[in-house]
Length: 118
Image (cartoon, rainbow, N blue to C red; front, side):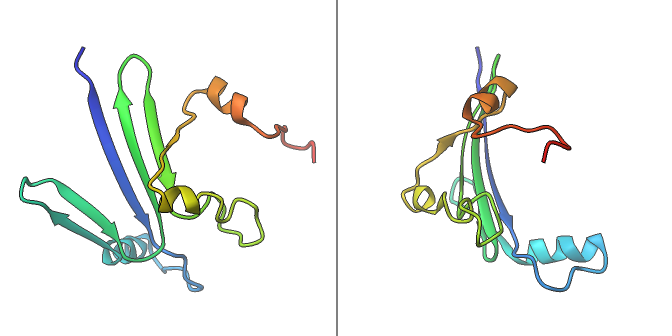
């Protein structure tokens, strides 16, 4: 079986207090904060110069497998416990398994709820 791997690096620019007036302006801002450099073999290396970063390695097969890391945390709220909970993993270049399938997500859930329960 041939396996295909995909490596993603997404640089997400920091939100400004003034939202872009059009979607095009927002994409231009993202592009301005992203730099792509090709190495001697033609492989692109993508660098974000502003905002948060997300890196993922994905293996496509009978069942999707993936590992990822965030530069800071899942939340953008500084008062959240998840604001910087991934920072040390990022500094240590330590990937975590991605919970892609429902059963994997449910195993990891700290709590669950249905809309209207709170």
